[in-house]
Length: 286
Image 1 (cartoon, rainbow, N blue to C red):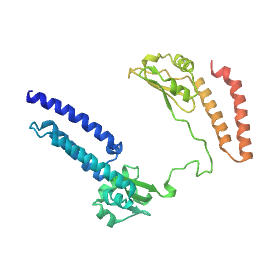
Image 2: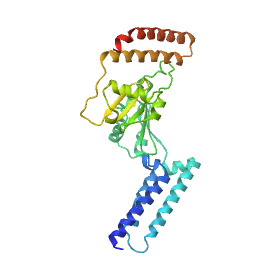
Image 3: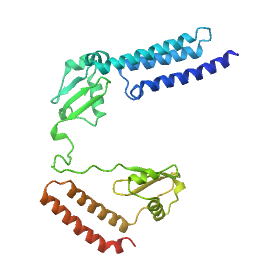
Image 4: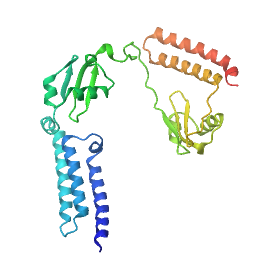
């Protein structure tokens, strides 16, 4: 067999084996490499290159080395699952860099992190002022997680004492010009409803690259033709949709509240708004 053809076959074989072995190690090997996994990834790549290019009679030794490295990786991962001390030794402990708005210089030196690098990591978390940080911790992966002081945290429904029901996930109901029946079922919609919505926007199913329906039943689409403009709803239908959204929110707040008086108030408001919507529907949908 010609040498160049042997190299081609070995390379294809090495790629398949490396892919399978890496897949066995799990998704974290790709998405969030630990210190040891980083070393393992480099070594596996080097061994795979050896298997591809070494044309002497001992190329199978590279395969043995690959299997040994995978076995060691599995052993290390098993040890980490069983022992906190092993995790701290292999992957390092998390390090507090900022506490109560104060930078801990000793920990910065320990991690060999400069002030410029710290500020860059904070900006990556949309934080531009050190005094706004309650805690900043460098994880074993090297990522910095930030907890803002209470007064600088975004206002949420919990801060206001409001309990809200979980919102439904936005579903892709059209993908690559094809209808997705399972996603429609999850949203409580039918294919006929979807086709009617497309007809209102003067669109064809095969012209749509991606179509999504949100928790309020609104359909948004992205067309194959990037320069094409999606017809926008008129003001009347937009107002009708907004009123329906408000009515649904009031009903949702009523269901989420544990206070009887508050629940009753929301239900009354929702019922009154529904009456207004019923009266305006002939004017807003024509």
